[in-house]
Image: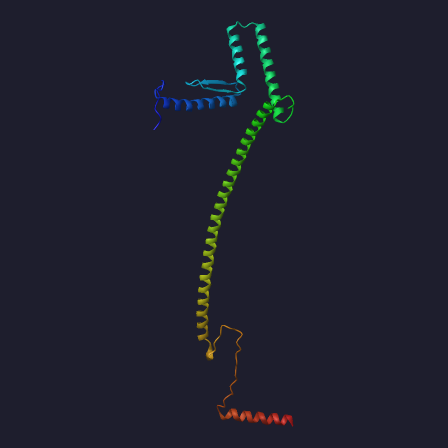
Length: 243
């Protein structure tokens, strides 16, 4: 549900009025800073609370903004003629040159140069300004390092999960290979037994090929008398040849 329209009138409850003032004051100061940065505008904002407390913001310095405002207001009330217009732009150029000089001097002081004309209080303010700047730089650096570490940790966890998945797949493939190997051995043993049963004279082929096989020659049997006579004649012939 969207927020309803708020009636713009004085808030009667003091607590609610103070909370609203704090929120809207911070929002107004934030918008003024964004306007000055984004649009390169010179912004000056002055706020007095109901208790008389002062809140202000200036993109350069409040004194410069007020002086420029007064000059601009006076120029608008006067009738612009060529002479006054030239003087106006001369004053603007002089003010810009002064601002540039102040900025260059401030930059040199921040770099540790031209500090001889500064008092102890000025040096202390400069040191506090540098410490605040350094603290902001360190906070930003720590934030970047923290974000980088978190990103690397997240990537490491993803890589670890992928490695675990690959490890499971490899174990599954290894188990399937072991099952196939067992099945092939069982099939090989069954086929060998079938081939052994088909061999003549009940010869068996052992799995271990290094086991020696002993063969014996049986004596030929004399089936008939003709064979005996042939052997006798062959013996006589051999004896005649040798003598």
